[in-house]
Every structure is written in structure tokens, then in C-alpha cells.
Length: 358
Ligand SMILES: *Cc1c(COP(=O)(O)O)cnc(C)c1O
Image (cartoon, protein in one colour):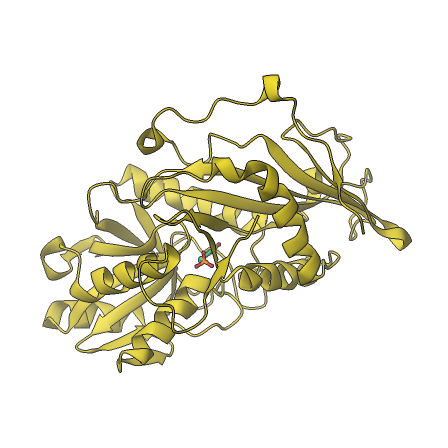
């Protein structure tokens, strides 16, 4: 499939951010976007790079009514020597297809996803910010565009990629978060959509997130929806516990998103000789380990923050500090290593970095 290119006229280009450190996540967008349409038996049609624009959609478009939609979140990094990097992008593309399958949506071949991103970034590479820690956030999205008010998988879809520069997540070093263990509200359930990156999971997280915020906490720690007993994720991140000198993270059982940062942390820790257990962990065990002092660190992992240390945890109206609320040694070490690999400043023994030659 040939990708059509319609560049923005030079006079209509958007201004680049004056101060990269002041960028608010998800508010600034690059000049172009990638789009293509899926039409029933004809499959994917008319792939194109066009100016970032408002979408035309029928108000009966199925995504607006039944939430049939998926997305991805990835980043492009500019190294100090000018090289451009993506971090394990094939993992995002493969996960996009797994999410699509779960939502009864069509697949996009991984090589073509690379081609689309390349064509887009060829035009917008100057939007990849320069300061250390900043990056270009990339958001591939697929929605059901068919106008039809009956419940079934749509026959028509729109796939697009938008991008925008984002500031460093920690301009002044780690900022440990306070987490609220939700024992009333759940994000998803085994057999549900938890392992797909779909809009519905975010919709079902909002109420609990607001509830926790009103109580003064930054993030929600999600428990399993059946027994409200086993830990699943934190906010929109995977979660890790350092108990004594081992790492524990919940196993991917269908309700947990298979984070690429999660997988990277596991591989890196094991590479360093740390034992990592992917096993169910009860909230009771977490609180006991915090009380006894065996809990050395808790941290979340995701593309946005890479590693997000947890400074305190609140469960059933009792609040506990984790190691005096300071970021742990392993959190810092894992963060430094992954960020170092992403920006080409540390060796990449796993072949995670994909050099973007545009
Ligand atoms: C995207 C996401 C993550 C993190 O995945 P990464 O691939 O590490 O960015 C974790 N949990 C949820 C619910 C997510 O949507």
C-alpha cells in the first residue's frame, strides 16, 4: 500500500514549543498525522500523512456509542549525538494487534505500522524535543467509524497516529506518589478487557481516581474484581514490590495490561541477578510486609514515567509510609538504566533500541 503524503504548507506550520520544560502532557501536537480507513471486505484503504486535523465523523459512529476503540502509547527520543530512538516499538505494534483482536477490530501488519510511523516522523522529526528526558509522545488509535446504532463489531474503522512533544517526567528528580487501595471500585475483571489497551478501561478508572484524589491521594491501587484481595495495577501502570531483596509483580492473568516497561524491568532485574517472582500477591501480604519493614520499595512502571516510586499506601483508612516516603535504590537504578538505554547513553545488551533513520 502506497502512503500518500500531504504536507502542511510551510506558512501554516505550528510554532514549536518555546520552552520544552513547560510542555503540558497531551496538549501540544505536531504538524502532521497518519490516517487510514478500513472498509469491510476491501480492508485498509488510502493510507496518508496529512495535516493534524479535526475528524469528520457521523454522530452515529459506533465508537461514540459502544466504545469500540483501542490505542497505544510510545515515544521517540533524541540522543545527545542527534540520533533518534524508539524503544521496543514492535512490542507496541504487536500489542495494538492483540488489543484489536480483543475488541473484534482488524489487524495492521507490523511492518506496515513501522512504515506509517516512518512516513509520519519523516515530516515531523523536528518535533522530537532536544532536552534530556523530553520526548515525542506517539499515540496510534483505532476507532469504529461506521455509522450504525446496532450492537455488533463495526465494518468500518479509522486508524490514526498523532504525536506531540512532552516534557521530562521528573524535571527535579523522583517525586514519590501516594496511593489509595481501592476496595470498592474495580478497573476490570478476569475475562474482561483488562489486558487490552482500550478506552473502556480508562472510563472505568475515572470514578475511583477522582475519589482517591478527593481524599488526597495521587493514584489508585487496583485489586482484583472478584475477591478484592489480589493486587493488579497502580493507576495506569504495572506495579512492583521489593520485598527484602526480591521483586514481586502480579502475573498477567487477563485483567492486567502487559506493560512493555514491566517486561523491561523484569528482564533488567534478572540480568542483574535479582530474583523476580511473577505471582499473585494479596493486599494483606503487602501491608504485613510494610508493617514488618520487609517492604523495601514499591513502584509503578509505564512508558510515561518509566518508574514511579510509591511513597505511601493507604488501605482501609490506615496510611503507611514506604521507607520514609523516599524513592528506593532499585527504583532509581532501574529508572537510570532504562532511560540511559532509551537515550543511547548506556549499553543496550537486549537490543531494545530501534534507531529511527528518517
Ligand atoms: C499502558 C498501560 C500500562 C503501561 O504499559 P507500558 O507498555 O509500560 O507503557 C500499564 N497499565 C495500563 C492499564 C496501561 O494502560
